[in-house]
Amino acid sequence: MWRGLRTALADGDFTVDRVAGLLGPTARAALDRGETTPARRAARDAGTAGTLVRLFLLGDAVPRAEAAAALDPADLDEAVVAGLLTARDGQVAAALDLRPHGDAAIPDAAPWWVLSDLEVGPATGTAGREHVLGTGAASLSLARATVRRPVGTLLDVGTGCGVQALHASGHAEQITATDVSERALDMARVTFALCGLDVEVLPGPWLEPVAGRRFDQIVSNPPFVPGPPQVDHVYRDSGLGGDGASALLVGALPAHLTEGGVAQLLASWLITSEDWTERPRTWLAEAGHAAAPGGLDAWVVQRDVADPALHVGTWLRDAGVDPASPEGAALSERWLDFLAAQGVHAIGFGFVTLRRTAPDVAGTVVCEDLRQSHDDPLGPEIEAWLDRTAWLAQHPGDALLDARLRVPDTVALERGLVGTDEGWEPVAATLVRLDGPQWRHDVDELGVALLAGCRGHLPLRDLVELLAVAHGRDPDELAAAALPVVRDLVHHGMLVPA
Ligand SMILES: C[S@@+](CC[C@H](N)C(=O)[O-])C[C@H]1O[C@@H](n2cnc3c(N)ncnc32)[C@H](O)[C@@H]1O
Image 1 (tube, rainbow, N blue to C red):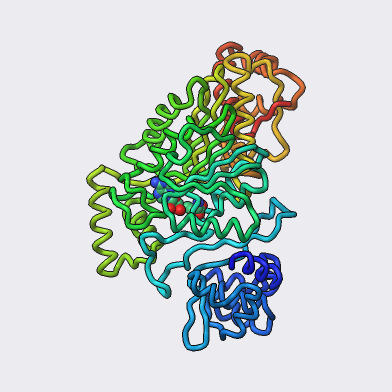
Image 2: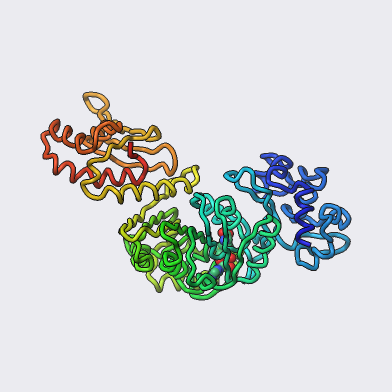
């Protein structure tokens, strides 16, 4: 049945490009807003692809004969028995979500189709306990943040519909996908079969299915949502309580990485003090032990922070529950009580990247906010961060003074001006990256002068000495003040080795 379906989807041209062309940008944008009529009008008279769009993307009931023709050579009755379709009154409708998917970074890939549960919402109802997510915003944000350097082995923990494994197929030779949910694994197996991918699929919780094994790369979009210690929805709740899922994975993943291997996950942390980094740093201390005899490079970027009410409301709606309904009110009470009892005043969310270093490299831990909006995908930035971190590890302490550095063309200096009796006077200087995550760093006038000299010709030591002479400063003191700033700027790609 699934092989026949793959043929039907390919022959019917139910692909990302064809659907985009068929809908056009206006109907596509309307559909993304939940307005289906423009897409329905565009899909009319659009042949087999139009029928498949109405059936699977719009959720329409379609006459049996029309659906049977569109799904040929897959048998319509078998599709009903397999749970893909429901049949009633001479019509069939989708019982599962089946949609084309793609990755512009893998241009020659065969078309992909992803099977998951139907989206939940006001029109479709609430998610069941075993609900299998489709390719949602969180899934795609992790896919965009994933390092895409060629690797031998890759593990996807909590594969769900299989979307991370799909994206990995462009750069990983062998992929292993695990999930605690049999329903999710059934869907992932179909996704992989439809996409012609050979993936090792293993059932079981967390890292149990791969005990004793190591991978060159690990990705995970786990049930990271902090909440009470119970599972209402397996895609969202780990059952561990609070931020237990993120803590468990950050602590356990390094032991499953080969030397130089990289793990990336979406994660969330409870914020109970002024310093949001407290909890991730505690987990990373444990993770450091797990990485031994190597060290651990870790980059935790906080993308968003929500107060408890926003957190609870967001995740109830995500499961199709109206927070104002009696059910939503009862769930909110329980959830908010739990967070209040833990002293939580906010919940942070973001990406964690871990790299197991060689035994002789101690590793670098950076936890920082990246809450500014930016369009460029994070994956290339994370690759560059890992390279810069390795380079900095090779230039510890004063050794950095021997390096020749330059300010890349994608970095600009912004100046603020205030009006004075003498005219506009500069008050502040900010170094700004115009690409990637758009980092910004305030710099003082000595910093501005030092950066002006960073053209890749002179070692940093010579620049600091020239500056010290020019400003009557002690060169050693100036170097001691400059080095941490320079390290931060290298970490953020605002100074690069010449
Ligand atoms: C947020 S969904 C992510 C699915 C998919 N990887 C994606 O990126 O869209 C989390 C997945 O983790 C699975 N999961 C939940 N608890 C788990 C556990 N203890 N061990 C492994 N997987 C688990 C769920 O069944 C679900 O498929």
